[in-house]
Image 1: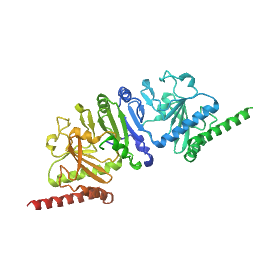
Image 2: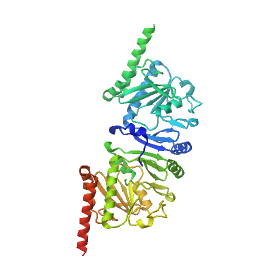
Image 3: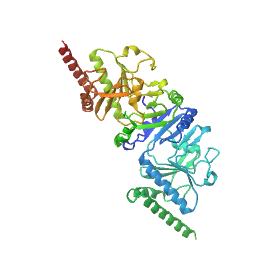
Image 4: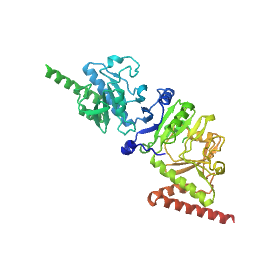
Length: 226
Length: 227
């Protein structure tokens, strides 16, 4: 009983960062939904479902920390900009009409926050999150970018191997780019260094330093504009 | 495989041997069966199900190797004894009446081999359970596997963990570790890990041949003693 999935074979998981990942093939949408309903919200694992293929993964602790910091950074940016964002964590983004579902490590409504504030999200009547964050750096047997793209998520951040990769949605997938759609002024390449610093100076100090950096950028922008 | 849930906390999984394991709570027997039927046999993962708790694990390569060698050892013993055994691998052992199911790393029919020989399907409880189940994973589990195996009536359990072979015999409600195998009382349990270790340098078949030779010696001595 060895899986023959080519993607799994071609992209081996590095031995030191094995993420718990189980792939089930041939699972009906009905069974997937029934399973999720029976288990409820009390679970540590996350799913991705793509037309019959159910992938279940257990996030590693190594992934949880950058995820938490990236969330704090987005919140810090919102505070400095004086805007609202809605953090929905690992919200299950599912579309029965497409028989696809995915759970990001975390996600935010930013541009569309006003449309979903206080609401229970129901796709496709509600807009998808404006930003999805994936902090796992292991390979996947489902093509997550195709999933996110089908679900209409305009921006994707992927923290992998101490690098933050930013993607913007294009037809059928994503294109890596050097600036964020939601926060075009954001010094993306600097984020990993703040994450690294948190390991020595502490998480809150790293977030405060990041906040200060954002303030500087915003100040120089407003001076440049004046 | 552990005795109580407390043991789970006390025996954390070593960081270097994390086994892929997902636990789902609240899964009905109906959904469990539907999921298994839809997925079919083309899967790398193994399950354990205990009254609503579905545990899914991905066997690691580190576990596959000792498992394969233990299978070869059982087959070598059978050959040396001139008896039949039926290797049933990761047969799904399930009892709908108990809403219990488990898939061992491997299992054998030995004493009851003739009752299931050539059968396309084994259905518990009308058929007997395997005489021996082998678990070569050494990570903790969130379901009490010993209780499961015991409920399913498996009389003997081998567990290869941390380079040690632990042998258990079924008692009411669980298992008792013991120093001899029920199926093969002459088996030199403590010597097994050294054969597994030797396979890493000499090769697997050489290790199995050495084991076979050792079994022959033991059987020869026994027959001399008995004569």
